[in-house]
Image 1: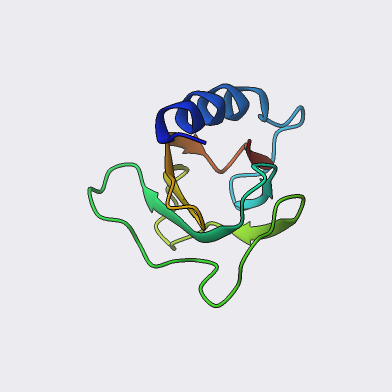
Image 2: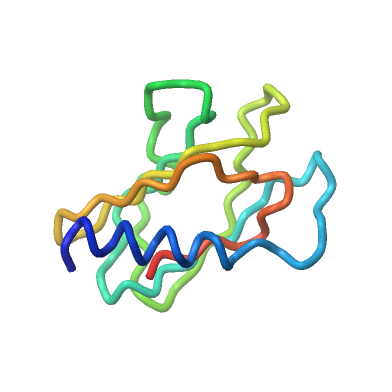
Length: 110
């Protein structure tokens, strides 16, 4: 899948994955779902106000297509807005900006 097409699909899916219920501000757990057909080999979440990516949150793990993982995206600052970077085994990288982890319960790569 091309990087451009992945980004378009990712953006469309991200807009539809907002939870129907609102989580409390302290709950920053987000289920990351991989439906790409390709293995997710790295996932980064960094505050939207920064320009650098934080470490690979799933380091040492891989998320095959059809799998999901719950990640607590809490850097201790109280921030809610995070940018996501997914890296896949085929070399594709997908970025999604300004995800509100205080209300987002699930995020799907498609």
